[in-house]
Structures are given as structure tokens and as C-alpha cells.
Image (cartoon, rainbow, N blue to C red; front, side):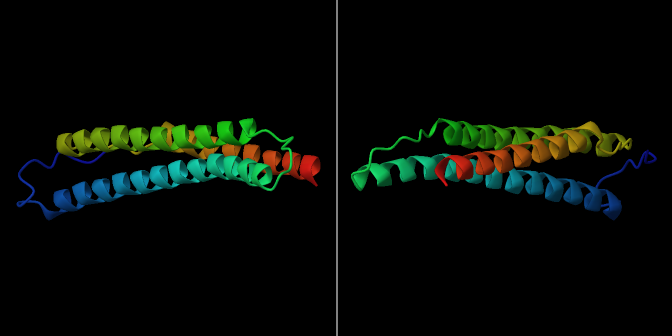
Length: 135
């Protein structure tokens, strides 16, 4: 824990640096969340586009887009949750910095890492599944 700093930001440049670092971290959460949302949209949209392409070429499409759409929606919701988690963490850190009692993140970082690994494994499994069924 940091000792109480007190005073204004102008009186203590380290305090300003801490708040700016907190803002940069929050923006990193936002960038990552937006990237995951866009990635999820691409997953869902790609499957729909492939189905439309096969129908346009006159082939009956046996494959459904259900799993791809659900994976895409899951990624999009995950990205939104990452932005919300970043906002909660930002506000908590800001309050801790103001009180001079900063505690590093623990559970949130672990949770994001675990969910990212699980989602990556799910996508890898889906690729294997589609390769076996389409190949």
C-alpha cells in the first residue's frame, strides 16, 4: 500500500503520473474489448457470408451457421464485459489512488486470462470440428 499522499496533483507529480497510468491501463482494456467485439462480429458474419455464397452459387447449404454465430456472439459479449471490467477497475484504482491505499489487481486479471484461454481452446476445437466435417 502507498502512504497517503494528500495535496493536489500539481503539488505531487507522482500522483498525476499514477492517474495517467491508470487512464492508459483503462484505454488498453477498451482497445482489447473493442478488438474482441470486432473479432466476434467477423466470426459470426463470415459464417453467414459463406452460407450465402454457397446458396448464390446454386449449391444447397448443408452446414448451418449456428455455432459460428454463437461463438461470435460470445466473443462480442466477452469484449463488452472486458470494457465493463476495465471501467470498474479504473474507478476502483482511481479511488484507491485518491485515498493513498492502492491494491494491485488480482482476481480480474486471472479471470480475463482464464476466459481468454478457454475461448481460444473453444475456437481451436471449432476449427478442428469444421475441418473434419467440411474437409
